[in-house]
Length: 465
Image 1 (cartoon, one colour):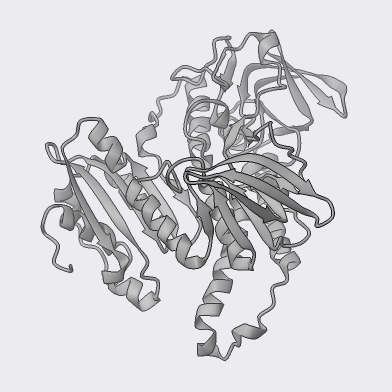
Image 2 (tube, helix red, strand yellow; image 1 turned 45 degrees about the vertical axis):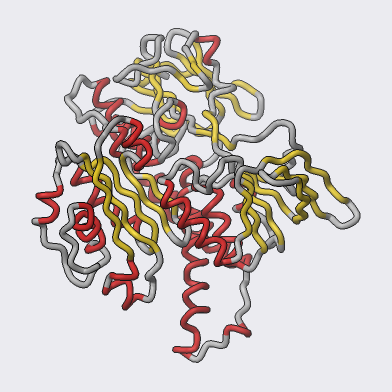
C-alpha cells in the first residue's frame, strides 16, 4: 500500500505530524510498535504528572490536616490506587488520540518498522514480516529510550528506569536515584512524598546541573530540608546484590571519600538516547552523528524522502519541541511558509516540588557569550498571593542585556512556576524589553507579579523589597 507520508512512532512528534499531514490532504499512515502516544503518554510526561499531583495532594493534606480535622498519624497511602489513577488518566488521553486518528482518516499500523531503500518500510510483528508499505515521504519520530550505564547490571527489577518505576507493585522503602535531571528530580520528590527514603547520586558538582546555578543551589537546600539525601560530584564504583537481605549495595565515590549505600531499588535517571538502533538506518544510508540523525533546517536527512524529528535529532529532548518540529516538517513538505523554531526560546520545566521552569540563557551562559548583564530576583516570600497560599518558597530570576535591553533568560523555582514561564516565552518571542514589561499591569494578588517585580529589581525600580 502506498501513502503520501508514513510516520514511524506515535509520540508527541509522530501523532502530531500524522494529524497535520491528514489536515493538509495527505494520505497518512503511522506505525507504532507498542502503545499509541509513545513514551510521553504511556511512561513519561502524563503518568508522572499524575503521580506528582497525588504526591502534592498528600503533602497538602499533611500540611493543612488540622484545619479540617484530619489526623496525620492515621493517614495511609494505598500505593496501588495511586498508580491505578495514573493508568486511568493515560487510558483516557490515549482514547482521545485514537479518536483523532480515526477522525482524520489516519491508517494506524502496529509493529516494528524497518526502513528500506526506495522509500519503503517493512513491518515486523513477533519477529515475522507482515508486509511492506511505501510512501513519498517517511518521517522518523521513534523518540528515545532510557540511557543505561552498561557496566552495571540493569535487570528491570532491582535496577530500573522510569518505565519500570511506573509499574512497581509496591513502594520501595529505600531508593537510590542516579542522576538529577528532570526525571530524577521528579521521581525523587514523588517517592519521598510517598514515604520512601530517597538518595540522589549526581556526577556533576550541582543538582540539576543544566540549570542556573542559583536554581541548583536553592533546589539542594530545599531537598536537604525535606530529607532527600543527595551526593553531588559523586560516581558509582560498584553495585552488588545481597540475596539474603534482598537489597542492593552501592559503593559510591564522593568528592571526599568512598561511601556504601543500601537500598531496595536503584532508579537510573541519567538521561535518554535516540531510539534508532534497530530501524535500518545503515541499510538506507541515513547519516548519524554522535548517536543522532543528521537533518537540515527542513528536517530532511541526507537521503531524499526521509525525514527525522523529535528526540532522534540533536534538538532539546522535549515533547513540546517534537510537536512543533512535527508541524514544521509536514508544512515544509507541503512547501508552506512556517515559523522557524527558536531553540533558545523553548521552556524547560521540572514538575517536582518546588517546581522549576526556565527559558533562555543562564547567568553563566550569558557571561560566557560576552553580554554585559542586568540581573534581578524576587522571592515568593515577599509576594501577597504566595503568602496567602502558604507557598512562599522559591524565587524568579531574570537576566537582561545591559546594552540592548534584550531579555536573555528567566529562571524560576517555586509553586506553579511551570505555568508562569509561558509569559516569558511570549514576551521574548515578541522581543519585549524591560520597558514594555514594566509598563504592563499584572493582576494583584497573583503569582505573575513575581515576574514584573524581578525585572523591576534588575533595573533598580523595585518597590516591594
